[in-house]
Length: 158
Image (cartoon, rainbow, N blue to C red; front, side, top):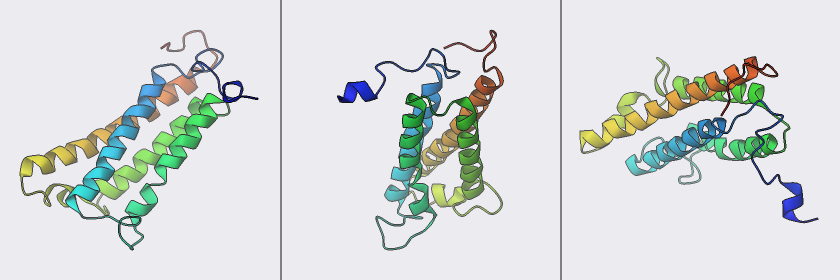
């Protein structure tokens, strides 16, 4: 049994409620999240294991990448669909907002902006963070719409 026998050759866009456009809603937040994690390293604050001995929220936030990989695999093998992704993105958006822009933020905006010598870089880093949060919220909303129209003729197409 070869690798090609275990994985579908094409995206599951038939007999599924996920559209081709949906995969952009997975890719964009993943890239923005990676950029935000790189930003942590560049500015040198709120960094934890594996880069420092301290285990902190940064360390736990790295779990998103294996979770995304498993989620994409489960999606490709048609084990999860839009309902799962709506919840996954909603939870992610809540965590991002709580840790970065809530009154109880562990890493408030000033911790993203101020460490940079050039304020433009600080504001760019904060813009990436806001784009990350927005992309996850939009992904959750889009997945919720796909879930809502599951099995109906008027569902959005991609």
